[in-house]
Image (cartoon, rainbow, N blue to C red; front, side, top):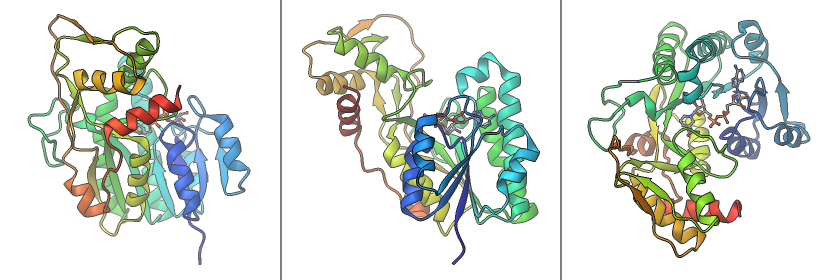
Length: 309
Ligand SMILES: NC(=O)c1ccc[n+]([C@@H]2O[C@H](COP(=O)([O-])OP(=O)(O)OC[C@H]3O[C@@H](n4cnc5c(N)ncnc54)[C@H](O)[C@@H]3O)[C@@H](O)[C@H]2O)c1
């Protein structure tokens, strides 16, 4: 039987840290391609001890480096990216990494004839949703260079599928949270902010009425979806990965107050806020990947508070 080898770009980052153990359990070898701007060196060094993980410390912007790292790989997971915040502050860098990087990875995967490529897309490709839950066929109105590059990445995968028979799935991750997340995460930094205040005995401060909502999906559930997308029979689709539940900021505050176990009430800061809401339609994930989330927001937040305590 041939060895299954995954080229994992951005494989030293937060979400990858939860996917790689699942890949090792399933007998994949993993070649991480990461420039280590945000990567976790200690974690990578631990995996290297298994003899099944190697680190190629290079940048996805360099096509030659991507091509040589792709040699002999049977599967690809493409996560390397710069975040939304950085894409607004520095659109040039963002376009370079997220557009040129995407193309380098997809073109090399198509040339290598890999069995499957999984691309980390994002719920942000939808922009402000017209309705909930958000369905994959809804109109896309990406708002920032990061979101635009995620959408373009999905379209580019369609090109390599038609041109070279590349087999792919693009996972539109909703609001990912869980152990190991960096505190400045664009959408989910509110979780850490509330936890820090509660631990100091202070109430969470909510702008407006706290009606704005997110679809919080736990990184353990999300990691399983990546492996399902690598192995599914059906492919070549964008697929929402969320829970289908929109949790308002006011509800999140209540959940975290219970999880931390303090006797405070949230404070409301009366001002006009844009009430954006998020909830994924996850029927396609269930049908195509056989994936359903297992961790409720209440459970996941409680575990997070315990783990970071
Ligand atoms: N975390 C979320 O809530 C979320 C939501 C939607 C989509 N996503 C997507 O999921 C993927 C993983 O996200 P994450 O939260 O683990 O991010 P992360 O920042 O923790 O990991 C990204 C990794 O990519 C590496 N990297 C950055 N630029 C690179 C370059 N030019 N060349 C090679 N490596 C480079 C970084 O060093 C880092 O290890 C990303 O594509 C992200 O856009 C994440």
